[in-house]
Length: 246
Image (cartoon, rainbow, N blue to C red):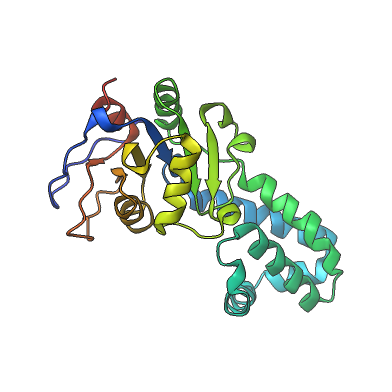
């Protein structure tokens, strides 16, 4: 069902300069699909796999506090992995396998079970129409701090390239990753429209990188990053296509 366009009572958008837009950079998680149902389902699949293949670890992982402690310690000990969700998840599985007394080599197949399910996303109803609309008109580059793979998700044909924090080494909101995405699209940053849902990671990052910003604000949140201002705020992706001239 289409998400209704919401009224936004925060600050006024700056307005898009349509003539400037020569390429699109596009966030994935929570812009094209809701991420937490995906992660929760992938974690259930992983839990079932552990209980079948590493029973002691599976029993240990039923206590969510154990996993939380492992992840918090890992984040503190391995800041070098901060932008690599794949490596963090794989190492967390390896550590909990050791704690459970199971073979840590099982971390690799366990992660693959999780990762395969992580790519099974439920797209928002407006995502595919927008992707088709955009990719017919502009080079589109995926720009994500996460580890979704647009090809495994099944939408890779709409993208010129993908730039991820894992591959680039820094994540949003660092302007450098936005500049790398503009380069992948073959244009200058000021010629890019970035589309994303996270006001800080997507919004502040894109604006500081010199891009125009379309903020996808499905939940009707207030913008809290003045004096920076989105060029366009929309409640759904259909509204974005209308603003771009569909």
